[in-house]
Image 1 (cartoon, rainbow, N blue to C red):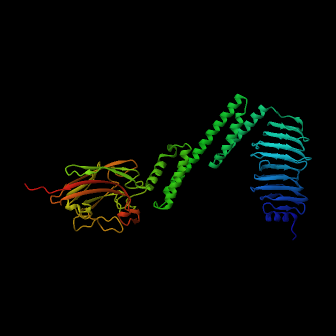
Image 2: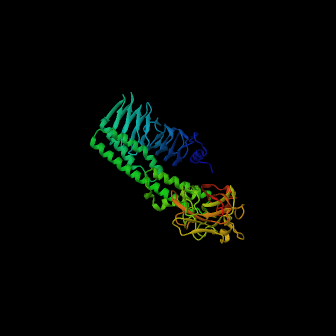
Image 3: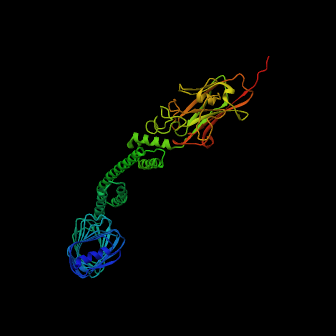
Length: 532
């Protein structure tokens, strides 16, 4: 079966690339849709039907040598259009590149809908039946006439430039037409009063701002230029009452845009924060990325003036907890001096980030999180900061049980006391130096216990030590000297460290690989008392 002219034309269009020219071999009856930037050479033939050109491509479209018995509609926002086709219906110019419709045919009826502004030029010696500037054409519309225009119907503001030798027979419409040039204008049913033109232009610009969609952040960003145009146009209005009314409309729309923006930003922040809780592994890069995205969305909302109360206290608390969880552990220790055997020795700990059990209880840590965690969901062997209390004599480690009968630590405000004595057993006894017991093993490579080292954790169940940023707690140390302690100069070094674990499944190899957060020192001297 032979290929028809219509089939051949459509095949040629399908095969064409942007910038190619497609020719018509014979008359066809068919609606044609073109989604490329191609030139049409109709070879003196006719298309009976509507032709639609819709392309985002940048370049030039040449339409020539034939006719369309129907409508021609063009949506090509980055294209220059040179039209020589005769069209029996309307030529609907929905969007073209600014300043780029050149009309070079006789008898056509043009409808300008382009919202971005357009410069439409009529070629010398050519006659256009009508040019209708539709209400949708809210940008700057300029018609440059070098030939003849039978009628200009302005439903939106337009500048008409009639060059020398050009004729416009009728100017009409409800919107102002600013007529310029040396050409001839016949009946002008439109005003040329600059004050009226300025007022109508301002009304059009304000309405464009009011009608702009504001359902996405991208759409809201696009209103900036519309608002700026409206403000400029209104500033040129001479009528004080009208100017105030238009200014009020802009302010109302500003409020609507801001409210819509805040709603979208709040929703974006809440959505991003909720995604943090959806990540199963809180030690993964995915979790870090989710927290980063939530911070970005929340910061964007705050920058736009959104208050934390608008985002929601529960959302902000969730994000704060996640940031606390990821923040590097940091603290400052103060105190130290000469060790007082007769009273209490106190040093202070100030958290520069959250220390102790990281995260939020019931969310980030719980008894079942790690098998070695206690019922409160935390122990210093897993996810929290801890102290080492090291005893040295002349810079050499010595066991506590050779110098002290008893030694105790207690956080002020807590009933929990960490006691060490000659009678201590288990881990506590081994750390104190008592034989026959298994001591503390925090690391993957070190021995079960180190000579002269006690371990004291910041448990989440001890009052005042599950620190948040800025919190301060005081730790009391008491001790009784062993009667047969060896003479010499002693030093107790209290060092606070970050968690002994890199992750929940990986321990640091030894103490040397941990970051110390702070240190305080106590000194004392043991000397024999001469017999009387």
